[in-house]
Image (tube, rainbow, N blue to C red; front, side):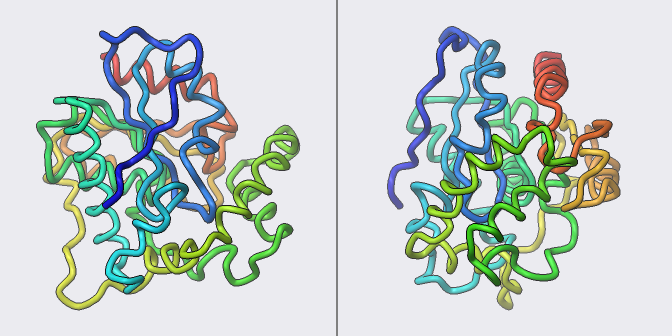
Length: 269
């Protein structure tokens, strides 16, 4: 496994004594940490020391993501592999205990797997969009029609209303398209949503995750219904749910100020 790279800290970051927050990006085609967290990382970095790695199968880790020569592993195995990736990162940086912010079926699922595997390493966590605990997508998005238009439409579906975000989506789409078409990216992406092989790891049982967790879900999420986070928060022994009015799947884009306030208040409690 190659070393996990993290994006450098933005201006105005918190001091070295501030709590560490690991930002785990979502799982859309062509995603990376830099683009995923651009709208909120500067604000979060005022209170936390933020680490934002590219997860296995994405960005700088796309070749690493082709575990087993591209053999479909299924979402559970991918979540555990990414949890181990983050634990390795924490060990290398000498970090004993951190907060987690996990976005959707990639980052959220990895955060759940990490809390199940090494609960002593996580203080508190915020999980977005159901954390991959809902049903898998009916089809693999974008790669059925890998064009610039398809990528732009894929991104538009992540916000409640694209009108106020057109410039951002127009800026993100070419970068996401380029990364989604890199060698190995499609194979890794398809493997994440493949049927788990016989004998694969069981799903994480939220009832066994005792870490305090805030589940955030956009009221107008078109990717995952609110009910997914409702069930997750109910199953977690120390879970709570906050539905963000007017937000889509990308809560941090639709409601960045409210998002940062909710995250900061919960992690600092």
